Every structure is written in structure tokens, then in C-alpha cells.
Amino acid sequence: MGTTIRRRDFPAVIKQTRQGVFVLAHNVTVPVNASVVNVGLLLSERMLRVKTEGLSTSITSELDNILDEDHGDILLTNTDILFAPEYGLDVIKLLLQLGRNQRLYLPWPGEIVGERLTYSEPSRFDFKEHNVKDYVDTYVVLR
Image (cartoon, rainbow, N blue to C red; front, side, top):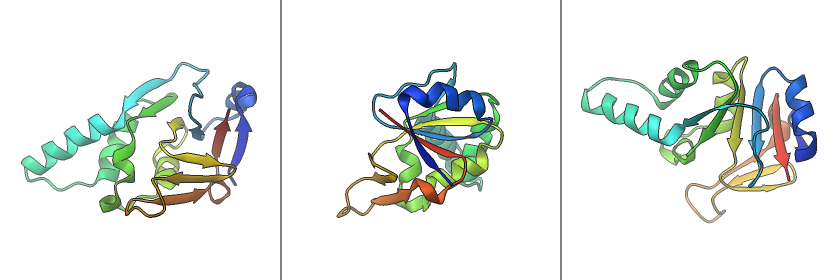
């Protein structure tokens, strides 16, 4: 079951945790050295290459390949591509599956209210809502 933590408790939780997805509220920084992965740029480049070469792949397998290139702590940036409705992804669940034995840090590109994470606005086609309690090894870091 996921949980929310305060920024001041973040370093202690990291020391105790070997894997998981850390969802970061706005203006929360990662207190460890983490590789920065520009998800949007790398996935866009790979998906374009695959399409132009007529190959078959999925965004999930390409993201898995990207994350496999680094086995330490990873800060994910420019992640809006993962929320695109055409892919139908549960982003947190996907990151938990692909980030086995890693700590992934995801600056949340939407709103965080308590244990509820939202992406976009309720009236928009790309709206998504998540409850952190629905996920294991998931930590929402609040200011």
C-alpha cells in the first residue's frame, strides 16, 4: 500500500527503501544523486525510429529498455508522453513493474491532494486519477 511522506522525512525513507516509485510534489527535490532521464525525448526518438523503420514495438518495451540502461536511482523528467490517452497506461503501475530493484523519482505533472493524484482536468479527455493506496512501494513526497 502506498503512503504519503513529508519532505523532511524523505532522506530517511530513501535510506530504508531499496525500490519503489517516489511521486514528488511541485518543488520537491531528490536528496540523492540520481541519473536524470528525459522520458519524453528518449521515448519520442525511439518511437519515431521504430515507426519510420516499420518495426513493431510498444511504448512499454521501449521505456523498459531506457530504464534498463541505468540501475541506480533515476529521476524521470518530461513524462507527459506516458499520460497520453492513446497508450492507455497506468503510469504508476508501469513504473513499479519496470523499475524493479530501482528507486524511480517522478515529479508529478498534475495535482496532489492528500492521497489522490490527478493528471489534467476532469472535463478533459486525458484526465486520470490515482489513489496512492492502490499501489505498493509508492511514496508521495509532499512539501
